[in-house]
Length: 321
Image 1 (tube, one colour):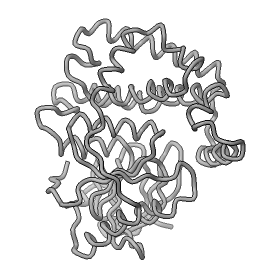
Image 2 (spheres, helix red, strand yellow; image 1 turned 90 degrees about the horizontal axis):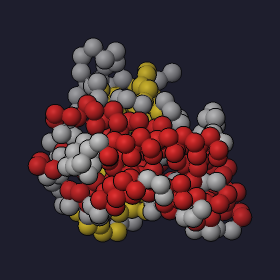
Image 3 (cartoon, helix red, strand yellow; image 1 turned 60 degrees about the horizontal axis):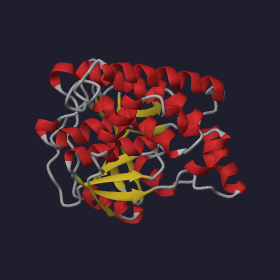
């Protein structure tokens, strides 16, 4: 990962309290004891201040440092871990491939059975703070537009898959006396898997009762939750945009490059979108492209010239039409 020279503004996490991927990143902040700025973003569209920084990427969370924006929690985790304590990395060299592969499963397969199961009628009220019917309707419409082509499982199917996956986690923990999925030290897979358990727990009884048989999972979850969330200070979205503008005016961006053999040249007009869901197209000038990362430069009248970073896995980049 690139060297991130400390700046006065530090890292800014744009998130909201009930977002599971945000919780994953908050725990990572806690594990490394990081100081960070917290910007609360809306759970549903419209999100004008989000768009000013990301160019149209609407998933939560995203990470900011000055005029650099990182999208997708998989990439954000690597950036923050590289900035954290070297002796506490969540990407241990000896087992990194296994940890990242398990995290990818947790961020997709486990996540997409936990979410529909938790958001059944018996749980959605607790998850959303028991809102009035019109708020529930707006939330449902937003998520339907966000995942238009996704075939959602029934509650019964989601529950069956969730119990199967929880049993697998229970078996992994029983075979490993260290307390975490890869031993005595946590890895990124622990945070990725724990976020789904966290979301189901928030739904309350009777939905969260699905977790009761899995005692090792419960103890493991408590160990992850004990990481805390680091030290956060509140920041308004307007101030975050002002930070981006100031850094852009000074020409401060993380160094990036377009590697050879990637099929696109530096300076090309390109479009990026996610390959799973929330496939909003983000357009800009290609300034970085490797096997691991895509970086677009884009101009915003409020934020200035912002570099928006995406992981290569899970995103499509091609020349603008």
